[in-house]
Figure 1 (cartoon, chains in turn red, yellow):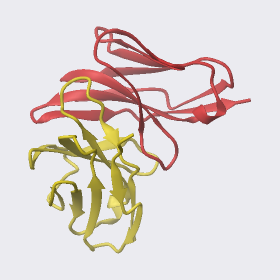
Figure 2 (figure 1 turned 120 degrees about the horizontal axis):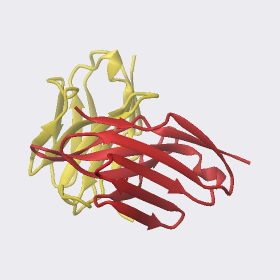
Figure 3 (figure 1 turned 180 degrees about the vertical axis):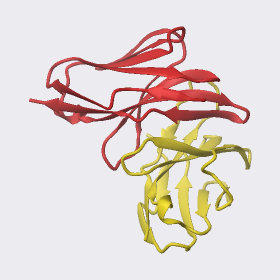
Figure 4 (figure 1 turned 45 degrees about the vertical axis):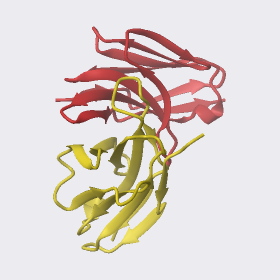
Amino acid sequence: GQNIDQPTEMTATEGAIVQINCTYQTSGFNGLFWYQQHAGEAPTFLSYNVLDGLEEKGRFSSFLSRSKGYSYLLLKELQMKDSASYLCAGYILTGGGNKLTFGTGTQLKVEL
Amino acid sequence: EPEVTQTPSHQVTQMGQEVILRCVPISNHLYFYWYRQILGQKVEFLVSFYNNEISEKSEIFDDQFSVERPDGSNFTLKIRSTKLEDSAMYFCASSLDSSSGNTIYFGEGSWLTVV
């Protein structure tokens, strides 16, 4: 089966750094995506890791350890607009290609 | 920046009615997907489509669902006889191909409410 786990919610302060963890147990694992989703809106692509290590993109970084089944999303210099749900998604090889299997999302609240 | 577009943005339909949700994927993309998200729940995979046929479908995608690419640009999801539990946000997505490293881009979604 496919299992993607992440905390349900987190709170952080504007200007701070927050790390959102994700663990996965999946067959056919072919990489890990992070998406941001504001309420009632579409998931917006943030990052993708297929190899172990850290991928940095401005204020956002994502890390993957395939051997540990673990990833995290790091958000620096938090802004109020970063309040959103952050979705961890495994990119899973299937017989017909690939598909995303999502976690439940981590609702991040950024406070003053 | 190219984007996936979906219509309608909102639809209310009576139980038992047929609904068609429309999507225009990014123009050079070859893989198309439908996902859904019931309010307050996770995003769930429904179906993937490549080369004019379904390449993968989930348990949710039963006989009441179908997909079609009627022309070179549109990709549709049809729900034949809607049920109350079909109420959800339906997201269309597309990717250039299915190999590692190709981002899957999502449309803005179609809110479906079945009453």
